[in-house]
Image (tube, rainbow, N blue to C red):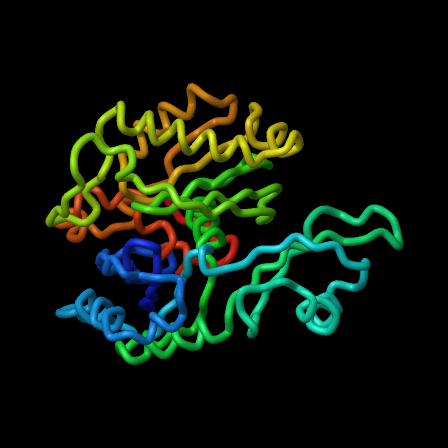
Length: 332
């Protein structure tokens, strides 16, 4: 048996999930959800500031982790995505071609891009061009993040984007059968909407949508950081209306045919509001099937389930997806 740790740096929380793996799958042994300070920022220089180090150290205080090696998931708000078209070539040559011909001409907010890419759609005839989705992030951001985690006693061995981790967790817990899937990840201030076609990541829309804008009354901290900000049906309906409006405004006719019609599915995950109320509201607005992602309780030990927050639910989808293998299926 081996222990594995997934860490998510979301816009609102530092999250950690430690699982034990055996022949039957994984069990969640312990988790951490700790709020970031209000000054959490996209500026990479901020990551070196004492406040972030102290926040992570506070989150880990008194925790006995079984391994220092961690898989890290980062928000796509830190990433620049670009759709580009390049000449068709053997798959092994795309990375070199992008490095030599494309990176230097891209308009980016940082001078030191690290990148990954995914081929989009098929090339049906020799000589046609290939569509590519590029994901780019600052190397200095990654370097700074790595140094901060190591200073806190953790050893990051792999860094991944949250949409891929979400897809792994959902697909491992209940197979994603639809060819057209939308994963909506909600946090207290942000939303990331990821689009998948035939299991391949094709696009993402991150945007700012604070839950407090839709709250009746004042926001206030609770002892349990996972207690929803929006719990009333009227509050969730107002939030759902704004969310649905943003998504449909972005979709062209092809997107609407793919993701708003019968056969498509929307999967809700994250924290901050009653996702089951949002599921009900959205199912009345679209012909696609809307559901809530599998909760973390599915893999909790009995002992952990007894003392865990009643609001854990889907809040650990990214950390759990980080520790899963590609294509892994969890046993019921």
